[in-house]
Image 1 (cartoon, rainbow, N blue to C red):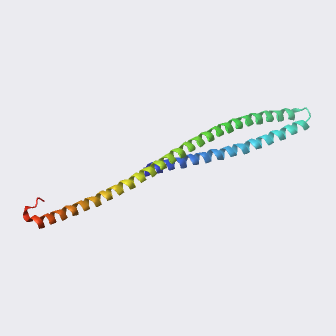
Image 2: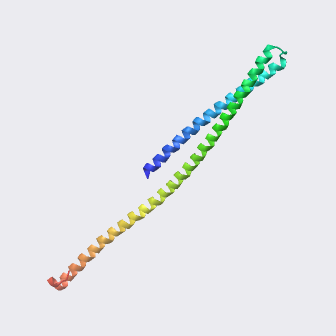
Image 3: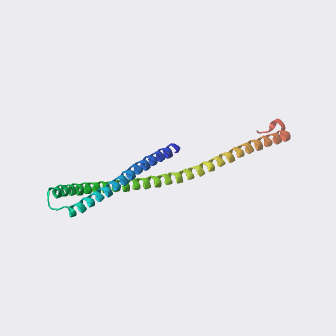
Amino acid sequence: MEQEKLIQQHELVEIINEYEKISSRNNALRIELENTRKKAQSILDSLNRIKLNGSEVSAAKQVVFLEEKNEALQRQEAFALKQYNIVLEEKSSLLEALNRQENKNVILEAENRSLKQSLEAAQVLQVNTLEVKDLIKKTCQKKFGNYCCF
Protein backbone atom coordinates (compact mmCIF):
# COMPACT_ATOMS: atom_id res chain seq x y z
CA MET A 1 0.00 0.00 0.00
CA GLU A 2 2.81 2.37 0.86
CA GLN A 3 4.42 1.55 -2.48
CA GLU A 4 1.16 2.30 -4.33
CA LYS A 5 0.94 5.60 -2.50
CA LEU A 6 4.52 6.45 -3.51
CA ILE A 7 3.77 5.51 -7.13
CA GLN A 8 0.67 7.70 -7.11
CA GLN A 9 2.60 10.57 -5.57
CA HIS A 10 5.33 10.13 -8.22
CA GLU A 11 2.70 10.19 -10.98
CA LEU A 12 1.16 13.28 -9.44
CA VAL A 13 4.56 15.00 -9.41
CA GLU A 14 5.03 14.09 -13.08
CA ILE A 15 1.62 15.53 -13.93
CA ILE A 16 2.35 18.70 -12.00
CA ASN A 17 5.69 19.04 -13.81
CA GLU A 18 3.95 18.54 -17.16
CA TYR A 19 1.34 21.11 -16.16
CA GLU A 20 4.08 23.59 -15.28
CA LYS A 21 5.77 23.00 -18.66
CA ILE A 22 2.47 23.55 -20.49
CA SER A 23 1.72 26.60 -18.37
CA SER A 24 5.18 28.02 -19.08
CA ARG A 25 4.80 27.35 -22.82
CA ASN A 26 1.32 28.89 -22.71
CA ASN A 27 2.69 32.04 -21.08
CA ALA A 28 5.47 32.22 -23.68
CA LEU A 29 2.89 31.86 -26.46
CA ARG A 30 0.78 34.63 -24.95
CA ILE A 31 3.80 36.94 -24.80
CA GLU A 32 4.74 36.07 -28.38
CA LEU A 33 1.14 36.63 -29.48
CA GLU A 34 1.04 40.04 -27.80
CA ASN A 35 4.37 41.00 -29.40
CA THR A 36 3.05 39.86 -32.80
CA ARG A 37 -0.09 41.93 -32.32
CA LYS A 38 2.02 44.97 -31.43
CA LYS A 39 4.19 44.46 -34.53
CA ALA A 40 1.11 44.06 -36.71
CA GLN A 41 -0.42 47.22 -35.28
CA SER A 42 2.84 49.08 -35.82
CA ILE A 43 2.94 47.94 -39.44
CA LEU A 44 -0.70 48.92 -39.94
CA ASP A 45 0.08 52.34 -38.49
CA SER A 46 3.01 52.62 -40.90
CA LEU A 47 0.77 51.62 -43.81
CA ASN A 48 -1.58 54.44 -42.97
CA ARG A 49 1.33 56.88 -43.26
CA ILE A 50 2.91 55.41 -46.40
CA LYS A 51 1.86 56.68 -49.80
CA LEU A 52 0.98 54.26 -52.54
CA ASN A 53 4.31 52.87 -53.69
CA GLY A 54 6.38 49.70 -53.56
CA SER A 55 7.09 49.88 -49.84
CA GLU A 56 3.35 49.74 -49.10
CA VAL A 57 3.12 46.41 -50.92
CA SER A 58 6.04 45.05 -48.88
CA ALA A 59 4.43 46.25 -45.65
CA ALA A 60 1.12 44.69 -46.68
CA LYS A 61 2.88 41.36 -47.26
CA GLN A 62 4.40 41.65 -43.80
CA VAL A 63 0.97 42.31 -42.31
CA VAL A 64 -0.44 39.23 -44.04
CA PHE A 65 2.49 37.16 -42.77
CA LEU A 66 2.07 38.47 -39.24
CA GLU A 67 -1.68 37.82 -39.31
CA GLU A 68 -1.01 34.23 -40.41
CA LYS A 69 1.56 33.86 -37.64
CA ASN A 70 -0.95 35.33 -35.21
CA GLU A 71 -3.54 32.75 -36.26
CA ALA A 72 -0.99 29.96 -35.84
CA LEU A 73 -0.14 31.24 -32.37
CA GLN A 74 -3.83 31.35 -31.47
CA ARG A 75 -4.20 27.72 -32.58
CA GLN A 76 -1.15 26.79 -30.48
CA GLU A 77 -2.63 28.66 -27.54
CA ALA A 78 -5.95 26.83 -27.93
CA PHE A 79 -4.12 23.51 -28.08
CA ALA A 80 -2.07 24.42 -25.00
CA LEU A 81 -5.25 25.34 -23.14
CA LYS A 82 -6.81 21.99 -24.09
CA GLN A 83 -3.69 20.21 -22.84
CA TYR A 84 -3.79 22.29 -19.68
CA ASN A 85 -7.42 21.28 -19.07
CA ILE A 86 -6.57 17.63 -19.66
CA VAL A 87 -3.71 17.86 -17.16
CA LEU A 88 -6.01 19.52 -14.64
CA GLU A 89 -8.58 16.75 -15.08
CA GLU A 90 -5.91 14.07 -14.65
CA LYS A 91 -4.54 15.87 -11.61
CA SER A 92 -8.03 16.06 -10.13
CA SER A 93 -8.62 12.35 -10.81
CA LEU A 94 -5.30 11.44 -9.24
CA LEU A 95 -6.00 13.58 -6.21
CA GLU A 96 -9.40 11.89 -5.82
CA ALA A 97 -7.78 8.46 -6.17
CA LEU A 98 -5.10 9.41 -3.67
CA ASN A 99 -7.77 10.63 -1.26
CA ARG A 100 -9.72 7.36 -1.65
CA GLN A 101 -6.49 5.41 -1.08
CA GLU A 102 -5.74 7.43 2.05
CA ASN A 103 -9.28 6.73 3.30
CA LYS A 104 -8.74 3.01 2.66
CA ASN A 105 -5.43 3.19 4.50
CA VAL A 106 -7.11 4.79 7.52
CA ILE A 107 -9.75 2.04 7.56
CA LEU A 108 -7.12 -0.69 7.20
CA GLU A 109 -5.04 0.84 9.99
CA ALA A 110 -8.12 0.89 12.27
CA GLU A 111 -8.88 -2.75 11.39
CA ASN A 112 -5.24 -3.65 12.05
CA ARG A 113 -5.36 -1.99 15.49
CA SER A 114 -8.60 -3.83 16.26
CA LEU A 115 -7.08 -7.17 15.23
CA LYS A 116 -3.99 -6.50 17.36
CA GLN A 117 -6.21 -5.71 20.35
CA SER A 118 -8.22 -8.90 19.75
CA LEU A 119 -5.00 -10.92 19.54
CA GLU A 120 -3.70 -9.38 22.75
CA ALA A 121 -7.01 -10.12 24.49
CA ALA A 122 -6.92 -13.72 23.21
CA GLN A 123 -3.35 -14.14 24.48
CA VAL A 124 -4.33 -12.80 27.92
CA LEU A 125 -7.35 -15.12 27.95
CA GLN A 126 -5.15 -18.07 27.00
CA VAL A 127 -2.73 -17.29 29.84
CA ASN A 128 -5.64 -16.90 32.26
CA THR A 129 -7.14 -20.21 31.08
CA LEU A 130 -3.83 -22.01 31.62
CA GLU A 131 -3.51 -20.49 35.08
CA VAL A 132 -7.07 -21.57 35.98
CA LYS A 133 -6.44 -25.12 34.68
CA ASP A 134 -3.25 -25.29 36.70
CA LEU A 135 -5.08 -24.04 39.80
CA ILE A 136 -7.88 -26.60 39.29
CA LYS A 137 -5.33 -29.38 38.85
CA LYS A 138 -3.48 -28.42 42.03
CA THR A 139 -6.74 -28.12 43.99
CA CYS A 140 -7.94 -31.47 42.66
CA GLN A 141 -4.64 -33.17 43.54
CA LYS A 142 -4.78 -31.73 47.06
CA LYS A 143 -8.29 -33.10 47.60
CA PHE A 144 -8.12 -36.38 45.72
CA GLY A 145 -4.42 -37.08 45.43
CA ASN A 146 -3.31 -39.13 42.47
CA TYR A 147 -6.92 -39.99 41.62
CA CYS A 148 -7.41 -36.54 40.12
CA CYS A 149 -8.53 -36.70 36.51
CA PHE A 150 -6.26 -33.89 35.32
